[in-house]
Length: 134
Image (cartoon, rainbow, N blue to C red; front, side, top):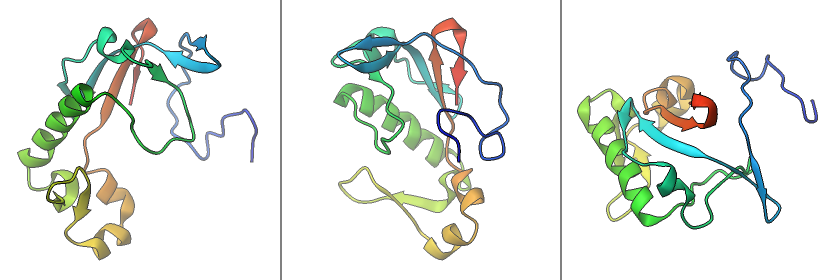
């Protein structure tokens, strides 16, 4: 276990990158200039991500909180990616009247989670200093 460090044995081997952050009301904010999902541009810009409370870094959050307009663009690209190829999104389907996805074959998803998870689109965030995070 490490506190405040980075253990390359437990994380990707990508180079570490440092981007500016801004302390606003004791929350760490970053600038997100754009977002690609599955290689396709969402057309979201810095002004979109800066509206409301802006983009906050919270390593403990497992959910996405965003404005409805941003969420709709993200969901649109996500749905396009999943519907483009039967192997994309590993045969999941969106639950009716919901934004949750359920694997059609839950046992297969659990058997090889890494393969199942890799069938979903990569989110690429463009940040300050032309850094792309995915």
